[in-house]
Each structure stands twice: as C-alpha cells, then as structure tokens.
Image (tube, rainbow, N blue to C red):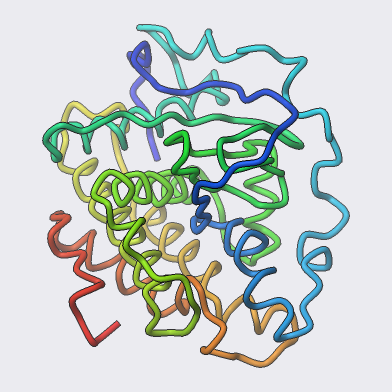
Length: 294
C-alpha cells in the first residue's frame, strides 16, 4: 500500500498497553490471526487433534513478561496532525486504526469509537491477561483491539502468509469487525460452540466480511490516508485470510482436518466472505447468520 506523505493522525485511538493483568469475565475474540492460534484453537481444536500450539508459535515468540509497562505511551509522536507513515513505520498502526474507525463512524449511526492498544509480552485487559501468543484479539469488556505489533509479521510468516501492510490492515479491520458486532449486540447473542456451520464460525466470517467492506471503501475514498491499494496488496489480503483458515492450521500442524472443531471457518470460507464484503462495499451483505451457504 502507498501512503500520503503527510497524514493527520491526531484523532487516532491508539495507545501502548501496560503490563500486568487481572481477571475478566467479558468476551475476548481473536480472529485476524493469533486468536485462531491460541485463544480458541487451544480450547477447541488443540485437544481434539493433539496439537501443541508452542510448536506452531516456535521459540521466536516474545518472552517479555513485563509487557509495555516501561515504555509509557510512546505513541504520542504518531497522534499528530502531520505524520509521515513512510518514515515513521510504527505509526502505520495509528493509520490502520484511523481508516477503519473513520469508515465505521460514517457508516454506522451513533458509532462508539473503540481503542487499539499495542503491547509486548503481556498486558492487562478487561477480559483478563492478554499475551503475545494469543495474537491480535478484541476484548468486549473494554472495547479494545490488542495487538503485539512486534510479533504479527512473524506469526503471519509462521502461518505461511505473505504478510505486509495490507495483511496487517486486514487483521485490524477484522478485529474492529468484532467491535461492530459488540455494538450491535451480535456478539452477546451468539451461542458458543464449534463446527463449520456454528454460530461461532458465522461470527468470525462476518468479521471477515466487514474487513472486506472496509477495504472497498478505502479504495473509493480519494481523501484516504492510504493513497493506493495495489493488486499485490489484495492478493496479500486474500492470502492472509487463507492462512488463518481452521483447515489450513490443522493441516499445517500435521493433523487431520476436523470441521467439527472449527471456530473460525475454513480458508475457503474466510476468503469467500472477505470477497463478499469487498465486492459489495456494504455491511448489509455480511449476512452470515441468515444463510445456509457459508
């Protein structure tokens, strides 16, 4: 993706998280990438397939258990009116936050802004302790997307994805899709469970669809901080969706494909609903709960 040389990120809702943590009873959902791997894969898929998640994550995961407590809010330089994302690469996360929430604030009446927190190691959330190995996730208790920005690229690579900025934005847009589901009440009405046709899978596919809608609107918006989205970027987005399919992860771990244990959908399903959102550019097309054809 190409960015404009000067971007106003002063209204970005991005922070650095703090270390520590506590207990939380609210819902936390992963799905862009890492939530598939640990937060739900361990609970539903791992035991049934004998998958050792540490084998997938490898020894390269962050070992910093102190979180970002010592860093303070080091993103103040990103929340400025004149930011060059090309030279301040860390600030691209603030840009991702801005473009996604700018779209939803226009598309959804009475939109309530969420927050994105970057962290390393562990961080406290209203849903409990967030860890690097969970990958990106959304916590409904504090309406916050949590991402270890130093680890996302590595995790995408381990899952066999091409990666890149467009893949990162797909992750952010997916997690904010869960924020929309939280605001709409969809998240609270979903019955927990697994399976290719489960409500849990439908929830994740809808978030993928919302992500596609956001990309459609970014490409139409001549004033977007993202100047261009190339064909290669679109291929990277589709590849990222493929890499986080439940069947792909099961195959990668040397296990058999077990649709009954799916929590996020197959690679084909995730790519399909991403495409539905992108092709339509309309959130109403993301009717994963109203169709028998997932």
